[in-house]
Image 1 (tube, chains in turn purple, orange):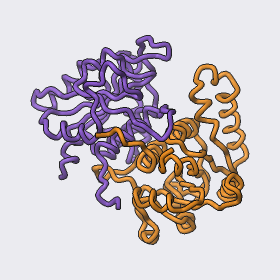
Image 2 (image 1 turned 120 degrees about the vertical axis):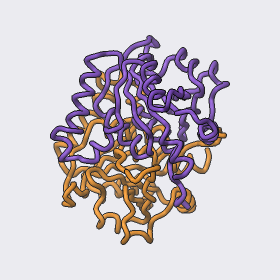
Image 3 (image 1 turned 90 degrees about the horizontal axis):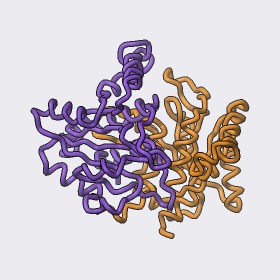
Length: 202
Length: 202
């Protein structure tokens, strides 16, 4: 197992539905979408992560996620798409960030996770904690703690939440001034930068 | 404008709904999905590509895409999400690969495009044309022709189609033996590897 594989195997991705901004800058809870469950589960599984959390405080949304997971894991979906059952095995829903962190610590002998935020734009007041992708790999490899990477829905994670994280990853920069990747795309690109096996890429 | 920006500005992405395999290995036409239009439009716009084509021979599907584009470009969607109107500006639907290639040539003074295929797994009989991401950048930069990168829906582009392409990109390899990225994620990762501005990433 390579260093990156070992690091991925103690890293969790989380899709945060609260607290995030809406387009007016108000703090809201966004709705969970079916494709966010599937696409991000498939990406986290492809890059060998330990797990994928969906965070929402709304009970009805938690129940809906449970029904979708059941359909693919034990229900009629499993026979048609066994690959999806495999991807969804590591998906868990949590009512809050605190409970997610407690769940990760319980899986790692009580060791608290280090938390990394992601954002589409660099925000000045948090510049001190911003790290590039190679720097993240170095810092996370040097630490023995489990790693948690947060992705925001809606118009992004709140500034208050960013301030509580250990690190913030550099925004993904394309070749234009337009940066509006879907969160599904942003997760895939981020995991590729952090964990891809590029050995065969001449 | 950097070399990569200039290259992106003459590169087109295409989501191919025919000819592709279904899970039994039969050649089929897949259905266009709404989120494939949006996510991939946003990714191609973020990385500065010249355009994004959806290829489907089915008239009803072409009409549906037209209605969706209209909703966001001129209809009620534009006021809520002006960013989406911007992303969808460069989306075009084509009934066939041949007509898409003719459309690209018409945009570039009659110069035919070079075509690159993508695939989730390396296929032995095409190994000779397979290139890594840096090698692709080199070859495409050395050429003056417009570049077209094909992404398959369903269970992937047909072997016959791969055989007609000029190049095939190395499959995306995570840190696991599981490789089932959604096509939306695969497009984002591929464009990031080919066109991202990583200058600020220490």
